[in-house]
Length: 616
Image 1 (tube, rainbow, N blue to C red):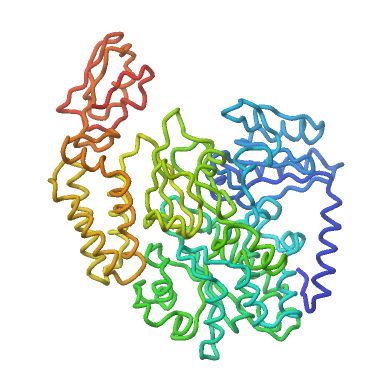
Image 2: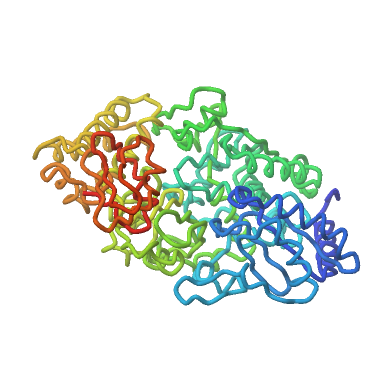
């Protein structure tokens, strides 16, 4: 590890790294994100490492274990450069074939290629795959080019050049002006102008100021911040150091929930590497500027994503929010001025400094600049992390990138913004994805969760799920959130069971508005969004539950009945999976479901190949 004492040392080190990288004939990159770990990417990487030592001694091949590539459902993913070959769902047994066929002979292995479900065409290049083709991967772009535990890789792609630029060629006020001019807004949910927050913190009274990176990220189905911190921790660190220099901060924290072990590990490695290289700590790059960072692990409480609750957690207190009459930029961690931005916000900063505020502000819409990372999950063919320019439509994300619905079903809605976001109907999918447009239709950008729902989704059930989630995650400090969410959950429970009258929906709506208007923090103020948006766009579904005692989507168990039609071929598959022995019938004869024993688990429908199981 080199010790960098001046900018010229950094430049020479980068030149040496690029020269060594250019000596490789082939670079094999294995995706090492958490999603690919679940599919066995470590075993694939280990097999490559072992085989490369024994089989290709005469060739210069580098094996790289990169960060998340985004297309998580297709893992493990590997790419082979310079050919640009993209292989998906690679298994350990495929390694020897890849080495002998592709690396040694230049042959493509068709069965490992991505197949477009619409055209049935096999695609060997990442940039031609529909999932990637419509994306604009600025922040995530280097995830596939660097190994997150090697600072050399980050420096090789231009890392820490922006830091050198600000330390020796820009004054703190110039940096803040550049961030303000760029139009960067916080990517954690609220969308507050980043430059304005930095300016307020710099102007706050106090000799000691803190910088915090928020990687709490508790939204169900969301993992943007985790993947960024796992895959490119140095870009987050560089953004924090630049921010600290601009604001006058002397110490920083990366707050990570303990359920993110790989993010914690890679961030800790990056901090130690930067410290040893002279990019953190005392006299950074010989500039006289001192700044250091440490990891703070959270206990996994959703409410600690809120800034003041997060601060309380770092201080060792219960994670409860406080009134926002006094802002954290004035009195935050241990009563000192504190600037908090989320992972994605910090990761944008080096790009803005490198390429300029005008370049950044040319991307996106008038009031929402740059790109945004979303976790696209739910009832679409292609799921994973997507990075798109602000202003793209929901339709483009769901159909062009996501590939449209699964199993021929119709897309019904999309929920954006996590548990506190709103449900947007398919009729509004031409909507521009930006901070203001989403807010206008009763949703929000949030941290970037995007859950797609089809006609098999019950919107009452969705609203119930999110209300109960937030009820459990509420810290209980303020009465509207503590008691209001509980009562909202009870009402929704009743509706899914067909209980209620004409006044029920009016009461639910009124209660939701009270919780929204009177809660202390952002959790309670946004918690009613799923309910209010579902009532706004899907009210007939609520009314069907109450008046017809029917769940149109066939989801709410109290209002449905399972039966078997004459299409039954008597294969017995449903009999084998039924947990309560509620299905009877002879082989090759039509079976029958005993309603008094049926628990409506749906196992029979899942295994029935003749589609004979009917939900009424």
